[in-house]
Amino acid sequence: MVRLRQRLRCAAQHPRLPPSASASPGCSPSPTTKPSRLTILTGLLLHSTIPARAKFDRKNYFYPDMPKNYQITQYDQPSTLGGYLEFEFAGADRRIGITRAHLEEDVGKSFHFDRHSGVDFNRAGVPLLEIVSEPELTSPDMAYAFLNALKELLVHGGISDCDMEKGMVRCDVNVSVRPVGTARLGAKIEIKNLNSFSGVRRALEYEIPRQIAALNAGRPLVQSTRRWDDATGCTEEMRTKEDAHDYRYFPDPDLMPFEPTDDWLAEVRARLVERPLERKRRFMRDYGIPAGDAEVFKQDLELGNYFEPLARRSANPKTLANWIINNLRAKLAEAAEHEAPAPAPGGAGILPAQADPPSGAGILPALVDGSGGAGILPAPLLQRLKFPPDALLELVALVENRTLSSSAAQQVFAEMFDTGRPPADIVRDKGLAQVSDPNALEALCDQVIAAHPGPVADYRAGKAAALNFLKGQVMRLQPWQGQSRPRRRNPRAEAQALNRPRGPAARPLASRYESQPDLVSRTVPAPLAQVGPPPRRRIPALHASGFPPRSRPRQVAVGQAASCGYETPGRRPPGEV
Image (tube, rainbow, N blue to C red; front, side, top):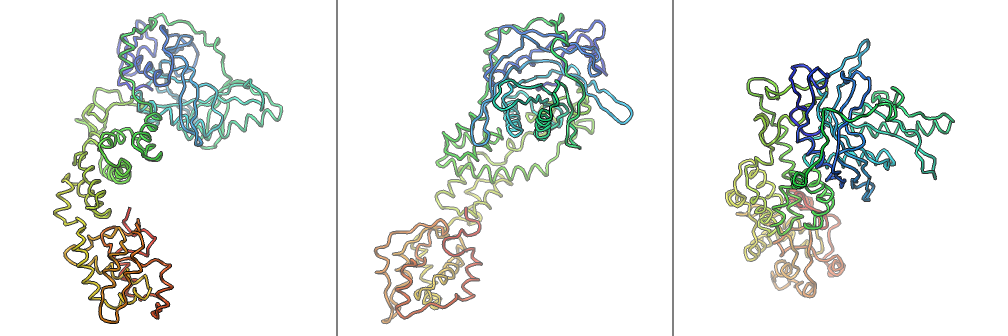
């Protein structure tokens, strides 16, 4: 259903039923410009051809959902012809052809109870955009992926909000089967009463085997309409399907043919937006982000629009994408849980007073929107962030240049989200900046070595676990209290720190490391380069020197290391990204 706030205009108004839907005497429909513009825009998004002339027809039938016994639609001259939709499925790009996208009026909604039925005419006469695909979908999962891709396209293009709970999107499925190796499809059987895309998939998973079993048993299939019962998980026949001539189509005498001008088409083309799949491919190509991140920005248009201007100025768009997807999106979701729509002025509902209240599926789409609309719902949370976008770039830069550790950056971001303060001010006030002065760190190492000769001797004897205790002691020293986060192991500095002469019997080990290159570890952050375990291939030599290691590390060393958040080399410490 196209995004509108009003029905097709009528010559008269009625508080209960649109006069055009009831065919009241003296009433004639008059289409507004917006439905036609959105229909053409949909055709452009689907790579369709826009004919120079389109017309409206009357489709006659005797069903209770239209009291005038005909429906205004487009038959042989629709507003758009042909086209295709590209989407991803099973790890490959697929292209499904589009037959047409045309405009028609919606009908009423029938309700069936135990002993009686009712009809809701609230949505009768509402503009309805119908998109017909080619019979190229070959499985329930492919149909599900196609429908989701089509929904993304319509939402991105501003055609519809596609809220199925409000009846903005409905789907009828035509199913045909054929023997393997043949080209002609069998009887076309339509399935109705599908309220969700997952319902479409379940209905196809039942109907396709049902038709195959019927043909294998020698039972012919007749063109018909069936309803899907979601509770029982099966389809039931409603009626046999009419052919086109049974509807007695003829041009509607109240509506003139639609002939768009070049200037009008140019205005519509100016509203054309980037298609979702094209957007995903461009984000991967231009910003070097993986497919998973690009998929998030494809599905969440607003989040992608927030990311892109920042990515153009970021030195590392991948890291920026991680912060937006993992941190910012989580905070937005948390804030949304605690925020409820404000009550409507003068009433308890959320609908503006001048709007007709929806019934059944909720057929008045986009009564309010994030831009203010009727002044009822607040603007989207992303537009009401307390911090400017540049603050996120500043925070990422602090982490990238190792001024701020990953765990400390989480604290800064949380306060930045709540208060809007600049990251630099939060880091300064809380004293979260990492220590990176080599001289200061070396002084700390000397102090720890002098205060703990036992663990130092154990480390020299080849017990690598003793190093964790020494790291923890350095982290605990004032005034930094854990802000010195080692990221790089420097064997030469390590030898200088741990093997300085402590007496005539001291055994220098610096020569063992002189020829070793610097070893970079993702799990041990930077500047405590003076401490690190010796390479494993050197441990046997240390054993042979007469200093055998203990069979198991001291319990205190393990406990101290765990309390400081460090683990054995090769494993990622908690909080480290």
